[in-house]
Length: 89
Image (cartoon, rainbow, N blue to C red):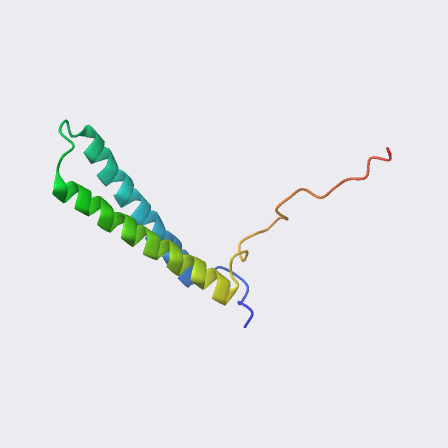
């Protein structure tokens, strides 16, 4: 089924979910780096969980893009500039 023109709301929601997961993981990793001891098992477990959440969000987005076909629904221009003939050989 071809996507309707315009912005796919599910794609937008999944992108935002992935973004939040990336930010959360980054914040946890930064806190761990700032910890002088760095031997907090609870911190390690939170990072493992955050990685799993990020991975699940990424997979959900990729699956949606593949199934719905909306990966390029917001592109207004070709991904590469068109080749221009220069007249040279």
